[in-house]
Image: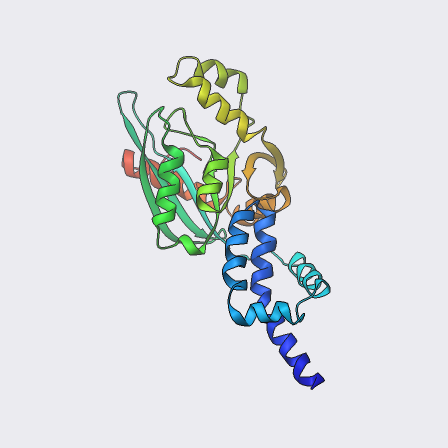
Length: 263
């Protein structure tokens, strides 16, 4: 009888590895609601509910599983989508934005595109909608942005983008933004005060070093260590992660007929 109970316990421990992973990762990226949704759905099923009632999953088991998850290494083929906007003229009303889907920093898997209004306020909505409708959605884990502004001063709300997609968001900059100049420039843009609030909400960029050179990032829904690990993993050919570098090449090439410049 003891052997049967032990086998039964181990079986349900394996069943719950995935649930514990979801819960832990959700906590790491501040997705508590998403975690609770998964857990409530799975725990409601009779076998798993019985497992809890019979005590086969206890605090010690869950602690052991969390320790195992903590020892995880970042998967080299983690799915990342990097977004950049195309060049535009002052008379344009909209500008294309492109999202390059990568497995780590080596293989490109797909491409998304959308259009945002120049100096508008729809970049968050357009990017999140494009991602949520994509067939790659369930595989994607990280959203990368070339800064938090697209099409001039169409500012991305990285917190809302994280909430609407359930993914960690990392905005990359080669240089520390000059916030005083940005704030002054926004005085001449419609809804400039609202845009400045989004800039402030994104926080002061953190600095990290890649091959002895500095790069800056802002993140939401992902802790600092994991964000830096993702950046390092995907920066295989340049200082800028490959998803952003390729998105920039595509964006400039489509609009100008030939790619130029750097992300």
